[in-house]
Image 1 (cartoon, rainbow, N blue to C red):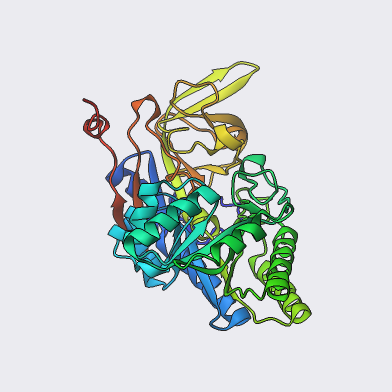
Image 2: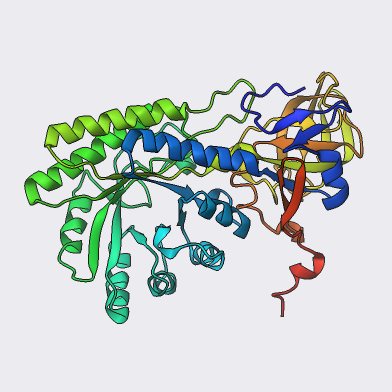
Length: 435
């Protein structure tokens, strides 16, 4: 049975099958095959509206909710974000192109990235992207040249490293001084770049951005980052009479991947951040900037599952039992990169007891290609369908063609109906760029 909290959209039917968005996974597999990403549209929309409503209660109309598209991006998710009247952030020319081709309003796009190419910046400026988050001085020089070329005034946020340790995996920490992202506060990098920007006639300094990391489960780092950023904003006003119109506090709101894991209390976190911001406003006697946040994982992570078919079961007596599936690190690289934990269920035997210890293995030619190691499962046999929960974020985004394995399809479900939103790659597709 489902032991997870926060399993909105998931249930078990009378046949003991897992159901997502009103759709029996057995039916989805028959129609679309495996591996298969399945996303529940109602869960996605619910999380979008949660953030919008919560921020509106805290800041009136003086806020933005910006979807972090790196978590999961395709044309259909962009359409949903557009319908919910949110903004969106992109970090590459490819993400920007996808969003623009989805008929998303350019003025609501935020362009991030620590190494935007000249061509990517040019694409953004030509298409009137609303805000560019500047990460380094070389980028600023390129942006100045492009702005003059197209005679545009470019709205800028400066990415700042607030020096906050978010207590998360070292690969996804971004707010500390030793980071490839942004300008440091400690050594006046951020101040110096601000003083350069305000001298440029083609730049409009709108404010600042920070992002302290991903999958954060404690509100304290967010509060500390808000305090530090607001202190910087207050000092800029007091010492240089520089106004800040927007403070983008980034994302990183953690979700629960396992039954005994608690997700970040999003409401409490946002309320604590607001309290800190208001205290700093009073301290410096300044106007409150527009407050923006960038949730990604927490919008789509728990909305998605991945379905696999079991191809073989290999028992090594006294050592381990391997259950091999028809996917792996090509469609979920997060285990081999981060050692990420996931909850795995036998999707057609949900009512059976989980009394076996098995390791779920992928089909790639790597010993480390695992979905999960030594997890409890019911008796699992060849042909069974396994579901890995909470795979809506970063799994499709980080998928690859390693071993020349085609990428999986993505299906959106809602109220018992399903539709294909990303086609499965074919073997023919794999050779389209070979010469």
